[in-house]
Image (cartoon, rainbow, N blue to C red; front, side, top):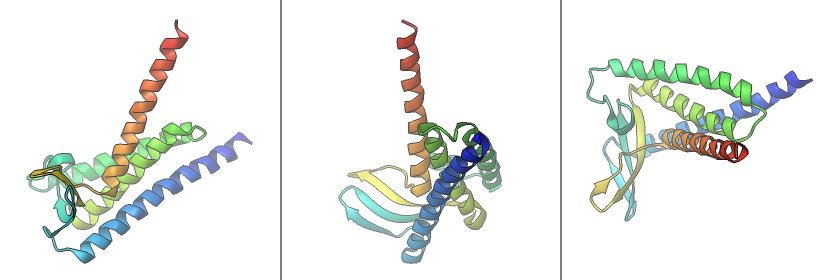
Length: 167
């Protein structure tokens, strides 16, 4: 009886990951239909919409490489995604860890889709303070960041609980 329940829980987490991918790809499709590359729109004094293609990783890491980085990042993301699915199988009955893993999985695969279709990741959310701009990012990047933050929070909370139990 335990196995079907875990399979159902895993299916729920994978469905949430698919929702992240759908939201990511839909937002990117909208921005690409509404903007030309490099075009921007000021929304608030600290936020712009802008269409940029990033062939690199976070903070444009390796963006000026000759193109091989595309396949490195695809392979890395697919490998991490496979590991995440294995971790989801183990922890599907929990709440926080599978939520964090699900967000990272959806974000990673959303960006893989971009790399396969556009040879770069589509970024469009641009925050700034005056003339100081944070690198543009997207829904997938946001999901990855929130997922990693949740994983760190869980680790620190577990470490704190273990310290109290050992006293």
